[in-house]
Image 1 (tube, rainbow, N blue to C red):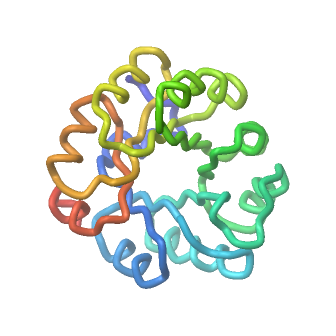
Image 2: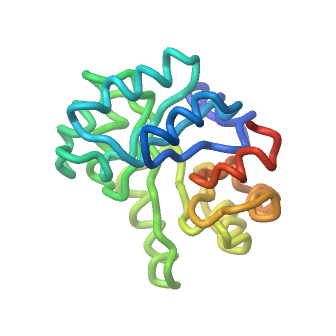
Image 3: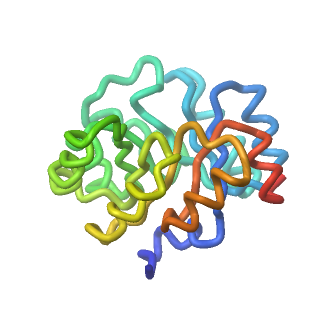
Length: 193
């Protein structure tokens, strides 16, 4: 699948470090992972946290739903665009992603696929925001990854519960462009740390 020019850095990055604390961020910056998803932070520190990543020559995307002090409103995307060096955002909220795309941020629609209703709902969510990428959670569902890849032209990231090389290889073999994980052992097992 040919990637939009803004997304080319995902093509050669099978492992995305998803960080949940400042200590883990330090280890992600020191690792060979070149894309970092922020799953923590607040409006007072996210700017400086993201700057540490970009100063290290890495790519930062912020899961805005998890940033304390940011509301699930369009202005959250404006804040990330204006006050951080993040290249994009992750969210479960289509209206927020739609606006983020309008202001030039890379958008990742995070979808929790808990049952067939959630799977069927992907089309409606995707149509509402036209995300650059879809992150399927949990990422341990190769058949679902293949199905979503066959239905849409939007690249898929597998996230959640990926713990080892076998999980990673399974998701990538099913068509995910990358996996996101906070499991540092998975960063190392694929030779990315």
